[in-house]
Each structure stands twice: as structure tokens, then as C-alpha cells.
Length: 157
Length: 157
View (tube, rainbow over the protein chains, first blue to last red):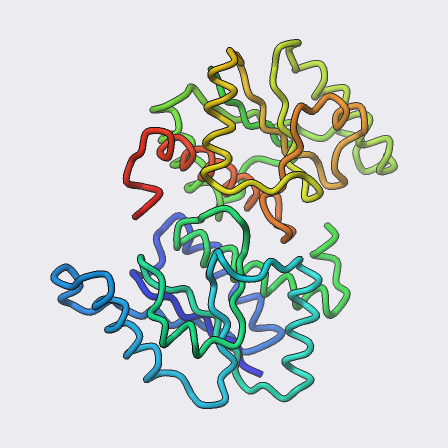
């Protein structure tokens, strides 16, 4: 099973980059994992919110494969504990999922064509985080979930 | 009103340090804010969990002033949204609080003498984060709360 983190926006900012890369590297000991940074369209500044989300949706949907399991990060989603995330990942592996895509939308969220395609909507917290911090938390949590599944010390240290 | 972040443990790790320092610096435009890193006792390795928490509690309680408003970060605490955190900070300022202490406990949490002294127990998420990430999230959220109170763009960008 592969894990992909997709994020609409800019390259990782310096304050988050080291941590994102470190946890993604560690995660690769469990599942092949990498990031796809989806640049907003070049004319983003001339588009309305709705037009921007539509344009981003075209890019996102064109990259998705039919069997991909799409997890949309959204504050209105389901709250999971770290062990529940671990269990959920285990279930995906057990049911033969080939690729999990964790998607962080753009500045205004995602177009409804994307949210309708999502297999799960996941909220990290009731708090609103900046995108860079969402990336860092996401990489750390998915890595942590893998250590929970293997009953390793990290989660309890 | 002053804001202090107290954290039992080591100095900020590199992957979190830049962000912690940046958000703390920005927060200082609203309230004087700084960090106190409380080192575990030198003989920590020879102590039981309970003894370690007791020793850390002595240090924590000795640093607290009578009027300090103590917020304990703990996953079993209350979940707040970012606007609720902002409201809560506003209430503290309105009621004449001199100093808010946000406390991140040690590896095994805090002794009950500390949790009994806490005025609020706050959970950032149902997820368990590493201490360094808790520090980064905490600094960012308290800064964000201040921008919400001033109706500034940051929270909506």
C-alpha cells in the first residue's frame, strides 16, 4: 500500500520543512510515502474563490486513480484518536487498498466535486492550523500510527 | 497581561525551534510572551514515574505565583475551537488576569498536585502529538487567537 500526501499550495516553508521531511522519511520504513505539491493555477489572482477551487479540482481529479482511497483533511470532518487512525490504516491495508491519498485543500478549501469523491473526511482538531502545520502534523500522525500498529516505543515515549 | 509557556523537557528540537520562535515573536506584538523550559531532575533515570512527576511538581509549583492562571495541556482536557480560545483569552484579560501560564507536562504527564492547581485543562486534539509539536501548535494557536481578537487577516488567509 502506498501513501501520498497531496497539498494545494506552495513548497514547504522553512519552519515546517525539516519536520515534514523527517517524519515522511521515517514513514517510508513502513509504507512508500511521498508528497505532491499542487501549485494553484498561474492566474489564481484573477479568479474568484469558486473559480479557483474549480481549477484546482481539475488538477486534483486528473491525478486521482479510480482505486485511490481519498482522505480529505477538513476541520468539519471526523475526529480520530491516534490509535483510531492506526486501526483505520490497518483496515485499509487489510481490504487491499493500493494507494491512500491524504489531501490538504487550497486556501479556500476544495470544490464539491472533490469532497464528493472523498472516501473519508478527517479533522485533525477543532483548532484551525496553517497549511504548513497541517502538513507537519499529518506526516507525524501517519508515522505515529505505523509505530502503534507495530507496537513500537515511539507512541509511548 | 503576560503569557508564559512552560514545558518540562529538553530545549526546543531543531525541527520545531524556528516555528516556535517565530510565532512567539509575533505573539509579543500583543502580549509579553516567553518560554520557560523546565529541565527534569538530573537523577531522572533513577526515579519511578511517580517520583519523577513529584520532583517536577516541586519545581513547577515553586515557580507559580498565587494569581497565575494555570492552563494545563492534556489530551483529556477540553477541546476548544480557535475562536473559543480567542474568547477565553479576552475573558482572562477582562477579569484582570496578570499572567497566564500554559503548561506542557513531562513525559508521563504531571503529578496530581499540579493538575489540581490548574484553572483549565486544555486538549489541542484527540490526537497525541510529540512534545515539540505541542509547543509549536501552542505558540501558533495563541498567536492566532490574538489575530482573531483584533479581526486581522491571518486567521482567514
